[in-house]
Image (cartoon, rainbow, N blue to C red):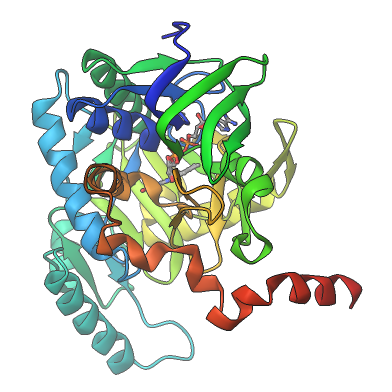
Length: 403
Ligand SMILES: Cc1cc2nc3c(=O)[nH]c(=O)nc-3n(C[C@H](O)[C@H](O)[C@H](O)COP(=O)(O)OP(=O)(O)OC[C@H]3O[C@@H](n4cnc5c(N)ncnc54)[C@H](O)[C@@H]3O)c2cc1C
C-alpha cells in the first residue's frame, strides 16, 4: 500500500471508512484515484476493537434518508465484496422509560411520532409494548414502558470493513499510500492543484480533492476558508468498554436507551461491548481527563438497563480514537468558496460509521454529475451562517476579537 504514485484525477485524504469506501466507489466507476493516509488504514475513528452500531433508530431526521440508503449498501456490500465487510443485521431496539419531569403520554406521543417519521423516511420502525420489548430482550430491566424496533439496524466490524474497502478499492486500480500525511493544500487561482506531504513530496490533483480525514480536516482547511466559513467543531474521544458475560446471557439486538447515553452490543465471542456514553479527553496519546468517572457513569447506565451486567467482570476500556463533533450533531459537508474543486466531509459527531456508505455514494454522484445532490444540502456549513453575516464576516470577526 505504499507505491510512489504522485498524481491522480481524484486525490482523497484519509484512510478511514469514508476515504476507503469513496475510493472504492470512484475506482469502481472508472476514475483514477490516489488515497493518502497519514498512518495506516483504519488508524483513526474507523479502527480499534469491537464493533460499531449501524443504526438509523433515533437519529436526527435530517440524516434519515441518507442512513437508510447507507444501510441498504452495508447489506449489499456484505454480499458483494469478497470476504464481506463485517456487517451483521441484528435489528436495533431503543427502549423508553418515563424520566423525572415527564408524563407517560408525552413519551408515548413521541415514540409514535418518531416511528411514523422514521418509517416515512426509509427506516421501517415499529412501536413495541413493554411485554414485546421483554420478549425480544429478556435481560432488560422491567422499568421500561416500551421501545422502538428497527429490523434493518445492525452492527459492523469497523476495522475489518475499512480494510476490506481499501483492498477492494485497490482491486479497482486505486493507489493507496500510507504513512503519507498531507500538510498543505497548494492552490492555483481558485482551485487546489496539489497537496504537499510531510516529507515535502508534492501530489498533483487532476480535478478534485476530497478531505475525509476527520480530526485532520480543520487544520488543512483553515488556510483556505474565509472567516465566515469556518465551522465551529470540536474533538472528543468516545469511550468503549468491554465486560465479561459469566452467565452466558444473550443480548440479541443493538440496544440503546432514549434517556441514557448508552449503546450495548454482544460481540460474536459473547463479550459485552458498552459504548455511546461519556467521552474522555486525550493529550499526546494519554487519557488527560475523566477516564475513571466516565467509566463509572457509563457502567451505571449499562447496569440500570441490563441488570445482569452487575455480575460481569471488567475487561478493558478504550478511548484512543478521536472524533470531530458539530454543535447540532450532524456532519459538515461542503466546498470552500476559494477552492471550487475541494470537497470536505467531517464532524460525523460520534455516529459516522453507519451512515458512511450513503454519503460516499452521494459524493461519487456529485463527482460524476457535477451537481451537488440535494440530499447533502442539510449538512452544508452554510447552516451556521446568516446570509447577511457572510458579507460582513471580516468586520464581525474583528468586533468579536476586540470585545
Ligand atoms: C469509540 C467510537 C465509537 C463509535 N461508535 C460508533 C457507532 O457505534 N456507530 C457509528 O455509526 N459511528 C460510531 N463512531 C463514529 C465513527 O466511527 C466515525 O464517525 C467514522 O469512523 C469516521 O470515519 P472517517 O473516515 O471520517 O475518519 P477516521 O476513521 O478518523 O479516518 C480519518 C483518517 O485520516 C487520517 N488523517 C488525518 N489527518 C490526515 C492528514 N493530514 N493527511 C493524511 N491522513 C490524515 C487519520 O490517520 C485517519 O486514519 C464511533 C467513533 C468512536 C471513536
